[in-house]
Image (cartoon, rainbow, N blue to C red):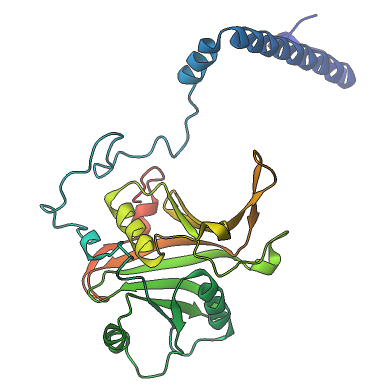
Amino acid sequence: MNQGNDINISNKMKRQELFAEIKDQKNKERHTMRRQRAKEERENPELKQKRLKENVTKTIDNMRVYDETIAKAGEEAEAEDDDNDLDLMKFFNTNHRNHPPKILLTTNVNAKKAAYEFANVLIEILPNVQFVKRKFGIKLKEIAEMCNKRNFTDMVIINEDKKKVTGLTFMHLPEGPTFYFKISSYVEVKKIVGHGKPTSHIPELVLNNFQTKLGKTVGQLFQSIFPQNPDFEGRQVITLHNQRDYIFFRRHRYMFRDEEKVGLQELGPQFTMKLKRLQRGLREETEWEHTSDMDKDKKKFYL
């Protein structure tokens, strides 16, 4: 039996049968090799560690372009007082014992049904939030001044266009900064199979993979919105996972089946955020803005 590229059989059915035999033979050899390797690694676990170390799968994430603002493991970030760029974390207050977050939620002018429905969802998610319907003719800076007089710490604006929620604007009070996120892939709670019903307990907050200086500034924003004293009895957790500059929002509840097994029940909703603009103050000088040219390099990430 000739194998490889030397097969020259004019009958199509014979060629297919021969190819199936060769493929089956290779599969058997591969399975035999894997069983033998697994047996050797069980006897000597160091062989498995060596194999995994030598055969690291290349992904876009681990081949990302080096960013000098990413602090290496075990190293402290450099002093940020000397930097003039993205030194905005000093404006955030993450000590909520004396000053808990107080959030004003509103929409853009002439908002439609989709914006108000999304507002109802955010009222369940954000702690200590108050919704105010946006009136025509009142500017955001005027609303911010009123919020400062009433000791609000943040203002969240729902951006809606063509009867669809397109973005979220976060304005940290009283001095900024301002973040604008694009919203996509929104999944309502009722469309999530097996979803649970959330309670009023303060959830835990999990921030994952915010590595750069810009990413840590975004993480500081979310830390300032959610209190740092979660109610563990509620067993609720909010996860904000950054992957390739897309921030995935998920909300779950821990389900303890017994003393050893723990599961997760999704509470919803699901949506994805992408940072489009970061401004100093209350929508003043633009510090960072996403442009279409940034998407050309698929291995360059900014969060």
